[in-house]
Length: 429
View 1 (tube, rainbow, N blue to C red):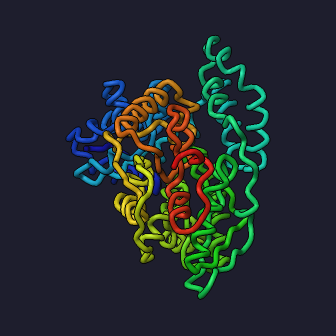
View 2: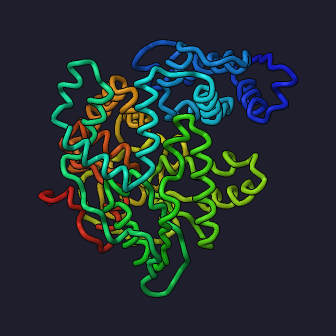
């Protein structure tokens, strides 16, 4: 793709990077076949290729983003399926991140949308505040149908995401150092996280049980909380980078061999810290070192010689977009589950997003619901006893559309190797 940035523009590191990414695009259109929004809507501007043209024109002009451009950028899920498909190596993730930052800096959204985004960006990365917000939303949740009838679809979607039963805070997973059982193999940090630690604290608890049984000392810092992913994908770069720096400081200070992550959306961002902080001389090297240590929990466990087992449940495995496209982790979760004795089937159209995508199912509820229903329909053709996945957003989103229990991969592995049965599977033999 030809670009016409000026020499002055190209002196800006962010523009220079965008230019290099744009010039790799050869207009082949392979990305359109695997883009969820293009598959649903059939609009070229809602495909990666179309958005690339919009971003190119927006950045070249140097002018504020227009409402039309923002509409199509906002509809992007950042599922990164296009990057898996692209034969030219276009780094769409970095390009759309730059576009969102430009939108946030230059475009004034309507008042209600501005308020909603600011509330989400402020509450979701703060676990205690997020929990209080969920309690308040649960009280208001019966009003969801009324909100939808009045056209307040985003409020309705937000209220609809509130868990029917709020999980109690998990003591085993609170900040602290958890000693290895038996001979010590190493020392790792576990991302406590923000949304997941509130919505499903059993995930971190299962991870701690299994890692300590395997001989790892586990550090859970109470200082890092949100990794910055949520605000990063909303274009709020100052907040995202501040959270990235805080995480880098905590994990560098902890002096660990690896940073283990149980939410694949967070993992994609943490593995990109080296890039996100590349222009910060105080953090560039430290951030790169932490990114190199970041491992999804299944990626980390793949190095262990876990024993083979038999007689597990029949599972459908949903590979989160951030897992398969963002981190390129595909075989590890499947191999681990099968070795642990589970019968595992991959979901048809597994490359298409379920519609969660951070705050997407709140900000774009109509598209998110269509994607969720399509995903659930594909899962239910397999007739599984349970669904396994590695991302809290997917667990929440898919769980809203089916009665089949959905659990994190690590909960199943913990159960298979001596931990308790996940409570969601009560009643299943």
